[in-house]
Length: 359
Ligand SMILES: C=C(O[C@@H]1C=C(C(=O)O)C=C[C@H]1O)C(=O)O
Image (cartoon, rainbow, N blue to C red; front, top):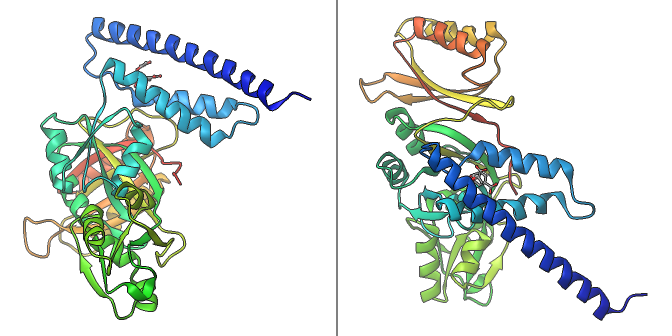
């Protein structure tokens, strides 16, 4: 049997080969940059190509090496190669450690340049101004429903949805207190507090609940005061060096948030896509039913419908719909045309590949 020393020598020599291959890959990536420049490409980042690379490699597999890890490794390899061409600039709301940052890093890797904008509107502004190539914003929570700030910003903006990601959201409680009995105050972002409401009522009934603008602000409170606790992602607690008091304190075991990537353009068809649209209907009986019948007749599945105030008139609404299919599919394109004939306003918010989710 090989000794531990022999085996480690073999691993060292394999690692050297991996490094040589990474160096070779980086050289080719730089050549790709030259080729793109020669072709006057406006954008180096190519999410469709990246998706094809990840899908191909995960399908191929690597013996006993876990399939999920293939995604993580190659996500970082591509992010690093892209940074040689031009680092991807990505905006997200909130501050470091927020779930939007977890989603953004999952999608774009460590080598991208991240910009915290504080607010959801700030993400839209940064992308519109070209300060970021794209932005990552939450659009709905499986527990709390729609993120209305995002819905309203989408309705008003010319930016398009080009990707989505459903992220499992697990909240932890952090504090310098010895145990729950030492916690007098719990600080958290309103979304976090709402998704942990029942747990807090049961386990910390006497604690004062304090809303903060971000997970980071909550962490700062808990850092400065041992009788304070903060709610946040595991990563946020680690980032701020706070001791973990309890894990998975969210009320529903299945707690996920759907994030979208907004950019100046949406994504080409992949065969498993969704399209988001917004429309307004005339104020007459049965108007919404007639509009929805267009999708029914075309056999198009709607995955979500939501109404928002139009902000033009009192008690006037617009409807946001997510449907299965790409806007370039003849069936979807035809349904949208028929919608235009019936509605006062129709706006396509973008077509994008369906999320396969992330844990
Ligand atoms: C190298 C390229 O540019 C970027 C980097 C990629 C990679 O490292 O594989 C893939 C797509 C682009 O985001 C390319 O377009 O092929």
